Length: 143
Image 1 (tube, one colour):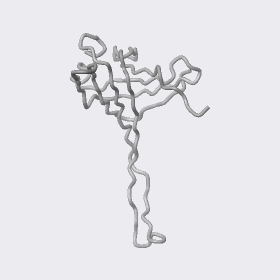
Image 2: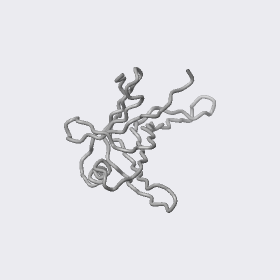
Image 3: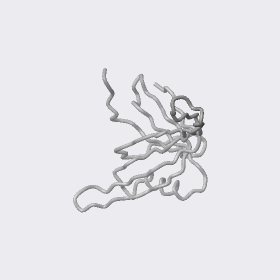
Image 4: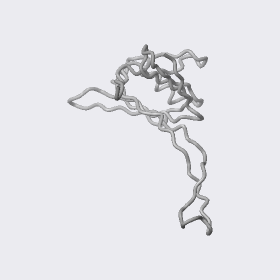
């Protein structure tokens, strides 16, 4: 098989601060984590063949971005406003292929860095949220 359908992927937030996760409703798109790593240049006058040389630097857990069909009266959408306002980090999960034998779960601690809405005249209301990951995100086989 060349690929898998992402339909059904879920985005969850820790609702209690004690590892009890609840589904965020009406999520239409999820991207990330978008991890990266710094490359530290260590080129010297005696580097072979005049090529730059690098060593591995610090890693960044990246970001997760979601888009939702926004409903201001939905409690899970209002919870994102509260998450944006809080000072501490919160735990989140992205469940890939839920219920499938190949289900995997990303888990990470993050803060919301961007939260915005759109109100077009000829389309649905949408909300986007960007979660900046603090520390290492973990991917676990949960199926």
